[in-house]
Image 1: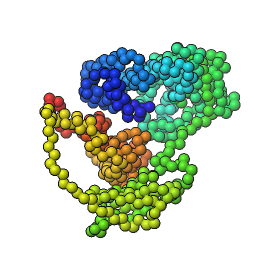
Image 2 (image 1 turned 90 degrees about the vertical axis):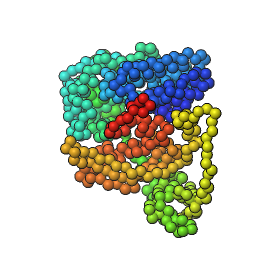
Image 3 (image 1 turned 90 degrees about the horizontal axis):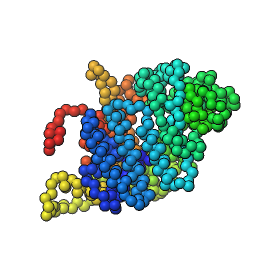
Image 4 (image 1 turned 135 degrees about the vertical axis):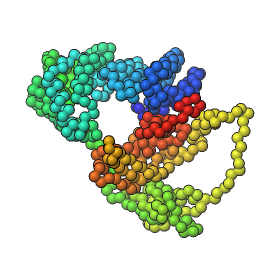
Length: 524
């Protein structure tokens, strides 16, 4: 859902405003995109008055959208998405300031309103919702905080620190997070209030097993106490089962359904039923190397083709030529001597095309089924035509700002949108408090993006990368540490200067060091 919102919301909103003759300045549209879509609060940090002012501007625009009569379904969805994004602003802004809001009531209320919206659109449909146990709880606030629960918090805290190496928050903060549940009104509270017995909420819980903690570390579940739902269900049959909570006759029991921590409550006032799994385990993650694991054909046998890319006339090597195999989205680049190596899976079954291209040369393609050897590939030089001087004439005065805005509208016309290959040199290093090197990595990264000149942090956009070379401090380097090549998204997030995700626009997203500032056009 978030990916769809980021990719299409602004475009859909513009179309809707145009169709409905709603006039909103380009400046305000930029604010909408910056705050609601990109969540960039850089210029409003520690300036709450300015942030409140721009929030009111966004609400005013929402008023115009709400006032539209006879909205089509898509338009209704756009307006509801706008409301949801505005609702998130307060918590997202607080997070930028490292301030934590107690519980998540505002967010859960908006989640409930989103469901009310969908139910009104389709009143005769049955809905099945899936999400975290907490969000579907009803009277979570009626739990009892006990010494036994606090003992479990301490046990879990010590265990996570031992396994992970550190804790995300302090012990005091973890205790306060649980106590704050006394203020909690999750989405389930609002849904149950409206739909009563026509709504049936099921929670999931386990007696033992493992869960995935910070940095993907496997954490064992601390076994629940004697007076717990999990203990009773495990002793009764010890198999995966479903229980209607009315069977517990309004007993106060411990349960770990809110995050592996036993909490005392009358759970029949929170959920209608519980699905019990005796032993849980984290799902297996598929790495990029396993992308074809669901294929019917075996992928173990990988063919590698090697050769040289040469100039057909001079017979000299063509350095940094691009080699791309269209079926598997694999790409490679020749080195300074024109040498290349590209691997393809044996599952390809002789289909596809390998393309060779270089700056100033005509692209050459070879059908995969005709390949016997790729020892030498010759490219012809492209004819270079010198263009006449271009003079821009206009009846109106063209300022630099206007030219940039016009160029922005024509990005797809003026910039290559075809798949591209680029090599990045990536370097990361850190220092301890005595300014001694604490870690260091340097790599050459070969990338391929099927969508062309477009940066993204989302996996769905399929930006592929391969580490060509890697060097590091041997005693400091660890694949388990989330730094270095693990932060490759920073390198890939390099949209063209006119876009909204580059380093000049989203400074808060990058690890930058301020070395000075200047005043330009009355702005710092």
